[in-house]
Image (cartoon, rainbow, N blue to C red; front, side, top):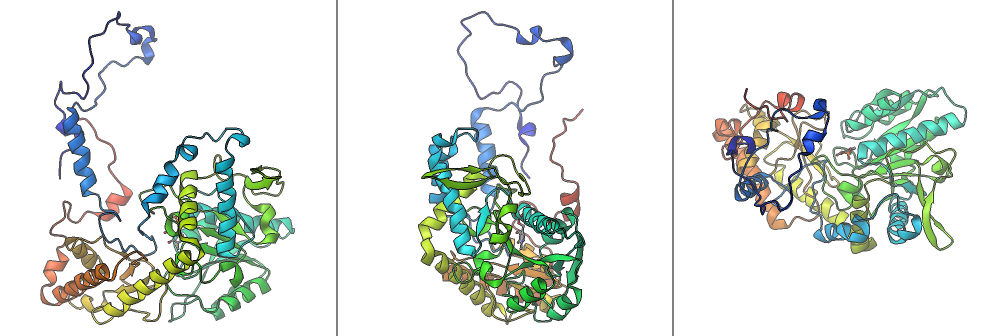
Length: 483
Ligand SMILES: Cc1ncc(COP(=O)(O)O)c(C=O)c1O
């Protein structure tokens, strides 16, 4: 562990060197009423410029990101994001405008905003989008609010339940709950797909809809999606598409053609912005024509050759974020889509699927793959074979750190015991994938021959094992000065 800036502080050191004051010094504090004045000096670290620079550089070198190496974090999609997108989002015409500027002064930005709505509609097969939501979970919330608005608008207040598969991402039941629905869990089959019989038996006039991810969180395509749509629509409900896994079908199939009524898309997973680290993200919400009037406010429109925002939408669920969403992320998505074009998006998806299937296939001898069939962009293995030597999925994940890899997602989805979810993404070369496969194969051998080595990993990391529950529940994010 290196020291904190506060611990490195040397009284009297500083990062500036100012010439002597040429005018009389004014004691600003003296002009303030006593109760607003500070009585002790602020406890801020005192360091020379070079020490401050070294401190932050050292921290940055410890951080692991997609630019350092392979980051196969399933479901979270940590894929490489072309640097040109960053360049585009920093152009002054995008980064230096103010959200309160009159529309005629920001026509370029509005055109980009409008065209992004249109392109997302085309890619997903929906009829309109709002780019407001700031994350996937936020898009889900807006989408489920639209479903509620739709039922209430028809005078149907009896639908108080939302169906969610047991394989769903945790944000799905949480969203349904936040919007005021009781969650009904739908079982998965032994093949990892939604159980149609269970769905049929739970659909009723009390159910507002079904939230579904396709490909689902096991990376599997829900092949019976048309029957799913028939069951839900037949019972008067709506079908919600959690588009966090859109990169698994992008350019090949469209949720709008599968019968989905409402969708969100994680721009920060599929379209060129890093996911994780707390944001910023963007979770645009899209709908089919009958639901357009409920979209959050405002929606960008083209008015007689100019672009602007439409606020005159009396049935809208209202605003879900200040101003217009995370505009920088929207610029990156626009740049990504335009740079790749229709063919490039399809190609990206195909490579993501190919890479996932290659890694799955190569690892099936060393690891147990609970549902070993053709997957989309990600797949799930577990540590069943290594468990006989007392090695858990967590141990394998920690040992991967020693081999220089960011561990995949672990213990999700919940329906697979000891799950390890691997998403290689489209940008990784065969050499990189082979090296990763080899590391996992070596760990499988170590588990058998020297399990303690794996159980005590990581051996090369700055921080070994932490108390993960306390780290998550009681994080220490504040430095307390010793008294
Ligand atoms: C399947 C699925 N749904 C929803 C989300 C939520 O997205 P966000 O993290 O942007 O809120 C994620 C996030 O990774 C996800 O994988």
